[in-house]
Length: 329
Image (tube, rainbow, N blue to C red; front, top):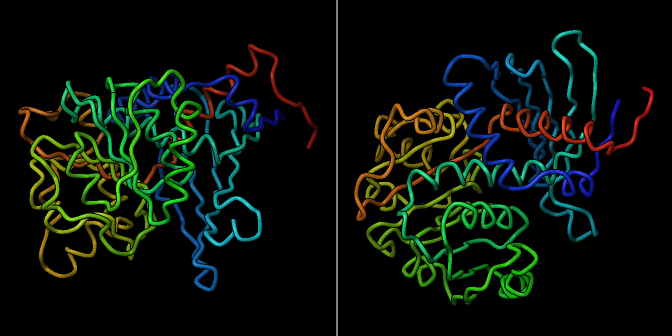
């Protein structure tokens, strides 16, 4: 079995690679070539934490995988990472377990890449300004992906704790190598959103983090932070102002996306409003942006086959490059 660390993955695999792999996987899913059972979530209320178990199989590449990822928000107080995970990659032709891959970074990368696929099709072509709401680790790859598919000149940061936004801004050249635009820190989320062409939301908030009234016409939103039913990053007004709302998977958001579940349970919104799934957008069976003044929203809670597609690609690159540690198990 090949063991691959985060450092080794970073040396092999770029955001550009990940976006290409996600586009291919989305189309394969649309063509019925992927098995993707719904994930199992175990909650640990005393820690406000959770563990996610995510299996999948992809016939075209002859691989299957199970990802286990834990999210413990109190860990940084003990000098530990919030998110930790591994992917067990198997050969679906003979059942051999071929690799154990660090999943924490790869999860952030594929989540960013999925948002990149959505942004390519939903954001304005001439979008230049991004607001980053929530400056944690997940936001880094989200920003990388947006910068990969649009010519971004201005980044506006907002975080509940200003120090975290400042630290993110100080690392911008590491997060997005070659970025030569401006970086500003907003006093509040509404101020950041009001100036943005693209909004990135990656928080664990249980209350909307900005007012939908602040959105200017033509804005695209990527929402990746609220992945449990009690979490909510966007308000009802945001949903009502959107002309197109796309989910990574409709089944997933119906079960897990508090952004939708909370207003649905209040009788104020309906899943019938959804424009469709990202698979349909990638395959071209539903329309992307059709007018410059449309407000669009992409909501992602994740799917196991995203991890499988990235892990399988990393594994192949590692074998070719002779990277990784071989162990007997």
